[in-house]
Length: 295
Image (cartoon, rainbow, N blue to C red; front, side, top):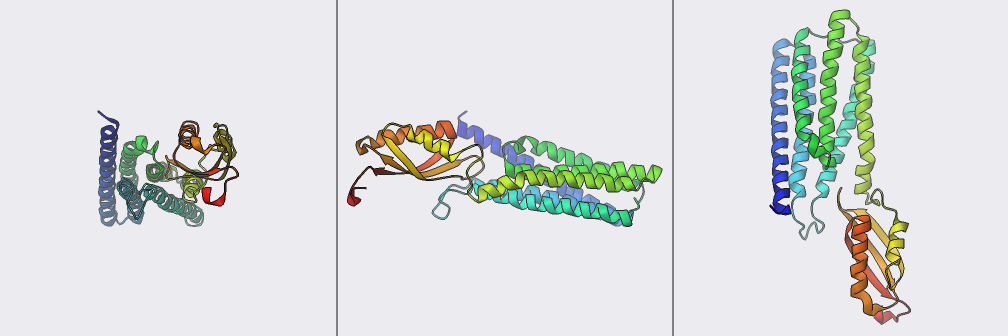
């Protein structure tokens, strides 16, 4: 099996996993809405909306994956891979909003403790926890290699923690009337959600702002390029990420001998690829002390 076929099979498996995760989250949302209406539990309906946001985050990630595979065209000459970075930003921003909302709810309950409406809410939360863990399991492996899927994965982890919080706090309240446990657990979950979002947001924004890839120092790149024979100077260097996995560079290269252009260009591109994982490079060559019409 060639690499292209293997990648295609991996992508197909990933799409099926995401599709299944979206489906079970939508079914859970529907079940919670019905359960909330029948039991008169507002908290169940609120949790249904939370699960719907998880399904939406997975759908955004799935659509972005589809768009990201589109080949480059005359509208998007670098291709569409940044669709996944944009989807990551959308999901991370909503994750921050979820974290802030959880913190707000937790602090508000200090003044107005929420009464858990019987064991039914705890049981439904347990079912939701199972679904959330199943969804997280489906996306965990994919999240290691894609910030887009990682952001959606964090949505599901946050929801799983929220469901776990309902079970623990609800049980403690029903058995011992420890209302403070609800506030404490919710604040801990909110802190975790905000921390995870804060660790990913800077990297996502850095890519969209065309920042230098993490782990690459421009001076090191220039030094490595200037070590190639016949290269006198390298300037006007720009390095950025096309997407999460592809680095790009453009630079001006001053040569001492223009007759060695093809050899120098090959050596530069090899050095950039091997030392800095820069697969896309655009080099403009100049000759030392040339006349204007020869440069």
